[in-house]
Length: 566
Image 1 (cartoon, rainbow, N blue to C red):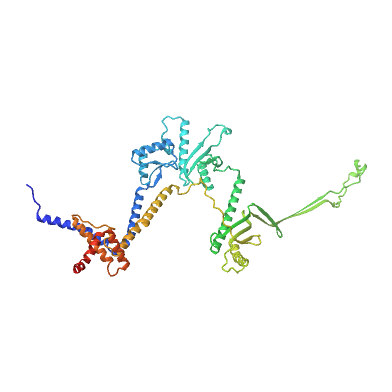
Image 2: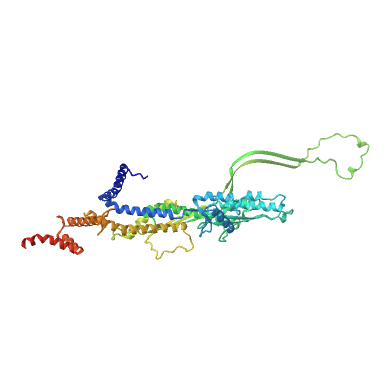
């Protein structure tokens, strides 16, 4: 049995329908507000720009990061296949040839590859040592040890910001029992630089020190560093003289750069940026001298010790009468003892005396080593753009002389000017020549943000299209429509020849609405505020659009007069 709807439910449905039918009218009244009409073009343009920005954000490529730079081609193929199977958007960059993934999925991609043991081409040194089979020979162990050390050194060098990838080759000769047959180890480092990046001398020296200090017995001169272009980065050791000359040159260039920056820092606020050119030349003496001086003071003596010695030699006096009688024995009568007589003391034969005195002499010993890198002479040359004179009648030479005179003390103070040393400061004021042509950038040089250039161009194209459509098409149409609505033209919001037809309207209702629109149009245009020219233009348009209706109206207007006269 069918259940008929209750009156209550029918009334609710009719009320809901009535409210739904009243929504367009409410929206029309809201849109008819003058403030909204004036702001409508701007709102439409903002909405179009927002939609374009949203579409660009949705369609643009997500930022990507490189996975394991420097992989071989076979490993790249395995990595891309494994990531594609794991649902990660892995691509090969067309510029660098590296495997890239979205930045948001970078860590998930690395974990996924690690779970599958990929990539196999970049194991660490510990893994190479752990893969040594049981019972391996000593030569195999040495090879694996060398390979492990090469991997660790390569990973350490690759951590440098400018280096994309690195490989290290160690040459360990076999040890011999004879010293003359032993050869020192050698090493070679191959580095792949990032696009547009280079290694400076300090970084190359750091790599050389890192490798030489990691291998026992490896000298710095036996380490070679080569980049991907085949250029030798490490310099051959030419001895202490070459290194010292390089240090001297670097020290002089640093001093000249420091003085030039001081002068520019003082003069740029005065003459303006780009209005001067400064060059400083320093003559320095790097001669190393070791001066030792010993001074003796003759007046500053002191007796330290004194020694006196005297020597005297004497001979005994001779007795008897020399001759043959003295050699014969005497007679018995002569053997009687004769009385003894004292002989005279003999004169000394040799006599000498000596005196030795030791004095403490005052002595001064000094050792002087002058500082290397002494500045012998400074020369500063400055060219300043000639200023434009406000008064054409002023003397340009006098103005330039006053400018040079005012800037001379500043420059001399900046470089610590010393006239006794022979320093010179030259300031020249001249007009600068403008370059005729601008040098084009080298074709092979890569821009630092070249990878983002397509995204930037796409964004600019979208912005230009939105601006052209909004400002060139939508804004004039909306402004024309709003001007017609603000002028009080009924039905202008629907366009010429258009009326609003509601659901369920009959033909008679549509004709009535058209008649009402014509009456409103005539009332608005043919009112008191309309000019005579406007009224004539409206009547001509009505007569042209509907001549039968105009004839009928004129007939009705003159019909009473015809009846009275007839």
